[in-house]
Image 1: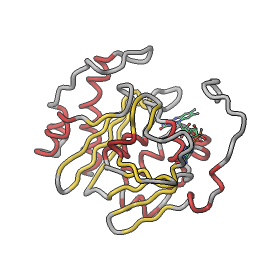
Image 2 (image 1 turned 30 degrees about the horizontal axis):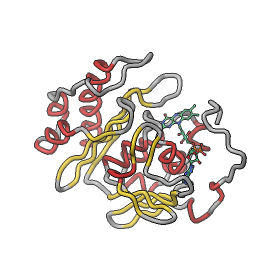
Image 3 (image 1 turned 120 degrees about the vertical axis):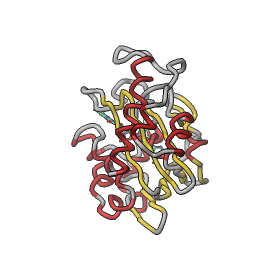
Length: 228
Ligand SMILES: Cc1cc2nc3c(=O)[nH]c(=O)nc-3n(C[C@H](O)[C@H](O)[C@H](O)COP(=O)(O)OP(=O)(O)OC[C@H]3O[C@@H](n4cnc5c(N)ncnc54)[C@H](O)[C@@H]3O)c2cc1C
């Protein structure tokens, strides 16, 4: 709205709907209400024990003011190509729960600022399977703290999922890194991967080649963090 990209005639604040403001940590699954702000995700003790990579991601979104007001549902519905949460939802294989259906992460992110949501569809919660280990690393834009490139790496019993944000028109999974890290979950294996710059963004902040260089570097750092 500040950029005049949207000029609605009426606004409804969903952040006071109590049912959308809870975080639940059950065996193997974490459910975060869509109206939970980033600061509350970052500070939730049970969540930090279950998926520390996710609370770490939330703790480094924007600044204090942004973390106090911005919500996980708002971030996902907005689907900024440099936003952090889309990488976590895609890498963890999350499910976006709406007022009418459940949308798998792989079907949710359609393109730049574009999701599978209908215009009147409300995200009520997001479900995350708990991985064996995971971590998020971003090379942040120093002005906004959005991701110039951000990588979420998640290791499950049946393999590794890696999602990249900030580098292209929309968040995507990196097959080369997933194959390498499923075989050897190490920083060295991540650094040995070469990522093509062909479909990546060049803008005033970084070239496509630079973003391609950052992807395995940040993936390696995320693996090192996840491995403790
Ligand atoms: C200075 C600055 C720095 C930032 N840095 C980062 C960063 O480092 N990393 C990052 O990931 N993000 C960053 N952000 C984005 C921020 O985290 C917010 O999540 C984002 O701006 C969306 O704001 P919001 O959650 O208040 O949603 P809103 O602005 O209220 O909504 C955004 C859109 O989503 C829709 N919407 C909201 N909630 C729902 C729902 N439950 N269901 C369906 N549609 C919904 C709204 O109608 C609107 O179209 C930054 C923002 C600012 C201003």
